[in-house]
Image 1 (cartoon, helix red, strand yellow):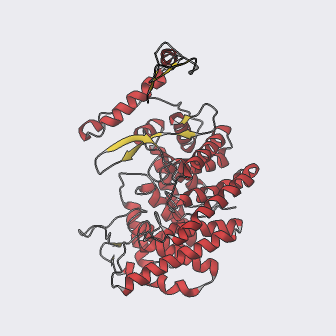
Image 2: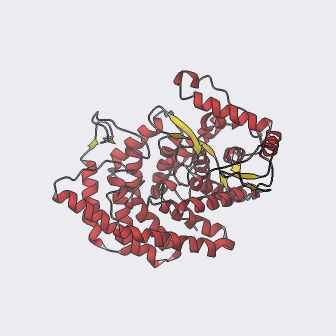
Image 3: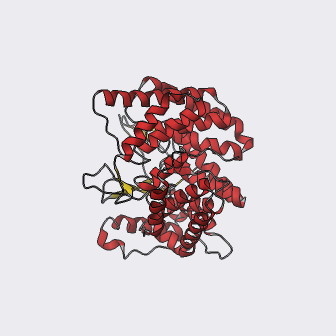
Length: 453
């Protein structure tokens, strides 16, 4: 069977020729005309931007791109506020003002990307954007920031039900992580958010019987363990602790099995490597008091340090056979030093000082959290805070202020026209600036730190 309608009719006609009168509220031609009348200069500029961004797949055209003016400059606003205004200007909001999305870039291989709505993730989706607006509103207390934070969490809730991943950055635990922060800033929604947390914990419980080999910090059990322990420590939900222990057992089983088969291989670093896994086991040990994790933590640290180069003052990136040494949060010395500091296993003092000096003097092409300068600056600031090193705190604060002075509304648009997320986009830059101004009162997203109350 098939159905059809005329462009000037509200009737629907069946394949047998039967006419269903006034099936549609409006004729299709009327709807098209109404949509055309709604088009504006802003729509025109947005479509031009999308076309230009698609052409930027061709490297020779990228340097010639120009970007349109979409939000007002203001000398009375901080850069973090300007980034918030920029994100609001790029948002797509439903007619009832309850939900939000953004058209963003999605990388499909090393050279190409497509334009698509952002996902629900903490890493580059609405949860990460929402976390930025949550803390932006805490600092500036503006309705537009509060409303954006709420739209982001509402939008994520719709999508999270379809998510089958445990990840703290891409999956169910990313929703848990952000909810654990929201619940303290929206007391009127505490009951609703608590029910959502229980819903996600119930869904995660099914993963106890579907063990897989994803044990890393970004995508697997290690990051999930830290989020679950955060939930337990802040909200005292026993189911979260029970799940964290189960996931910890999976990690230990995986390591034991790999060693037994003489197949123990692991990357270095916090995001996908030994440091991130050791960090999760250390938190499990601290919360539960169980010393079963101690030998595994030591083994992971020793394994990683086997790949340390005193000449390079860094740990080798084992993803590549060409002996590469990265200097980012995700891979390399910065993330490893951060993990060690949070485990109270500080690396050799003299070596660490040299590493930090090198990191401070490096030039970075990127300023984002995952693999850019601000991520490194936040890590060094965290190390300095734990060591109460005031000299280093001032050095890093000056460096962050220098980055802030180098940016303005035009530069924000140029750098982040379609990159809005927390770890690789504009929201993360805004979050880093807020953290730099209040590092004692804000959680560090790079270690999935729980809310600071």
